[in-house]
Image (cartoon, rainbow, N blue to C red):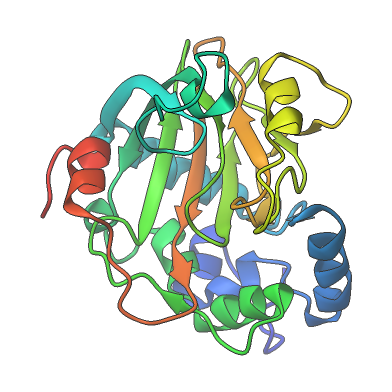
Length: 269
């Protein structure tokens, strides 16, 4: 394999140490297609964004970090707050679903981590901004929440919900034996209309509007989850689902709340 200067790379380690770009298939000509996907479904999926020959280094990195994950679980709402008791019991505002997962905080990723190198790669940040049709985006300033490794094991799942942020960027690193699919009902609501009846149908198990994205290793997903209800289906088997979650915002200095840090990482610093 040659790097972008035409020199032969000796090993995967050379790819990751010398230039993270050579481990990835970042193609600026894809931007228009990516924007079209975002407009149509609220998501842009790029399979094999990390090249197959580089994936073992990312998997090894994630497997080394996974035991450091803080576990959390319980019942969560669609809207990531408390149930709104002003609505009927069978209303989406009162619905509760099970979630269980682990998260490795940003400050636990060593400087030479391939996943961290990927997140901190400036050209990648510019590429994601272009896919989103934005002039610029900024990595989170949060020392815990800027970059996470989501670790989901047998029995884990993530309940149906809307995100509280405009977009999320994720990189699939390792698939579970069974389950762990990313399921989404695109553009379920709008800024002006919650479309509670459509949300209720998804929560009741109707599948007509639900798309399943298996999130195979190496897949990059840019997802606008504020208006599209989504979940991670239950995990089965001994192989954990490992996904890197990369935090960006349209303004600099973004931090997570202390409550979110306490729940997700078991600490606030």
